[in-house]
Image: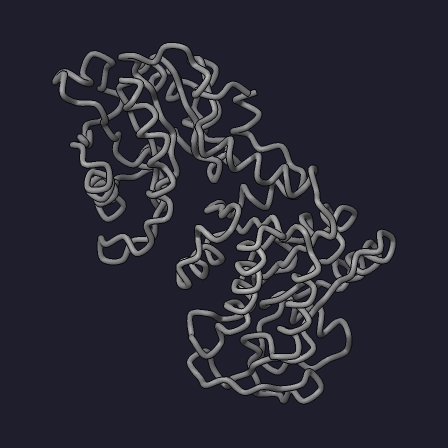
Length: 392
């Protein structure tokens, strides 16, 4: 996979740059800037090389139709302020756009094509659409690892028509995940949360032979508790998981990987309630498990303290309510402390995990924080990502 930083001459080259700027918006206001901050290095690199940058990105799921609420305009405005440069957004139909239409003003250095998912051809990985996009530029750069599990036109087929390169962020992301999964410093611990165990089974199975500890928290831990014959009240659970959980424990025994799950929890009657500590055996029918308890937190802290590598995907509880955020915060604080004395290599990923780390202002206190959700998990699962395959 060729990296753009190794390209000899980018002077005045028109670079089609695929980014992931799918930021959360509330009434047109960006509520989390992480994805925008992460693309600044590649933008500054290309500007320094005097390239002309054509940004392709998406926001939301407009399903091939124009939706003004999902315009990239707020992102352009935010990026303009951060890099102190004018950015032009192109609203005209991409199919009517020609290479010569771009950068007519010599002062223009960055243009944004409007939300690429306004075109149904994007998600269909349409060959002609890719060819047309490629015709706007001299070369292609994918710096959107978090979109690279999608076989979409601006990620996959486009590489058939232009010299194609990995971006700075994409390479950093892959190297961080490689370090966790192949260049491992043991003991290795994976903390995995989320609501559905079925969506993470591939990851868990792939990591068990390589890892020493897998800690299961969040909603998916409820299925483990049920499997162990415990009551979970009215807590969320996934149906038909017995075979999956049997497989997890069977595989972990085979490879001497320890599976840790909650032994005490914080409950409420609803998600907006105050928290109450309960032992697992004391859960009643109208209890809702929303966080891990102090005994479980201490157990997890000891495991992290004795680890050299930690991978974290998914919070420990319903952190949106501060009454149920303590488990996640304590996990974050323990990793940060180890990171500061350089006794651990830490990688965190997934939207909720990033949101949580942002709440404690600790993005810089992990070795690597990935904004990718699906691509992060599929890479850990050992799957070949279409966007990475296309670059190779």
